[in-house]
Image (spheres, rainbow, N blue to C red):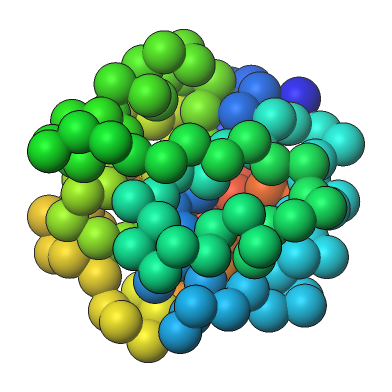
Length: 156
């Protein structure tokens, strides 16, 4: 579990980290070595999940050998499916990282939501429903690896 007390806001107790794949965790169908290293470190503190429609059909190969559970989206409403998944994990215990239109509801429901701007940019309503916006996936994951960094941004 990742715990951090954020003065004036809340005490976070993150048990689950949920990641969008395309445009967030991967860029151009690849996950960087640095991202994989951070994911491996986080796996000792929380359960990790990757939600994806698997557009490229390569998610299992990309994440082979990592302690992440892969959930391939199957409904016509990816936005709702992602939101329902977050709710099934216990909203307040979830840190959600994404960037697209289908991440908006999951961002809104999560105890902590981080929007990754990335090379693709981000969907404005998704960004507005996040708690923090960062430029890269590694910056987002580092906030969870070093949770005291969250205090500087989120304290009230």
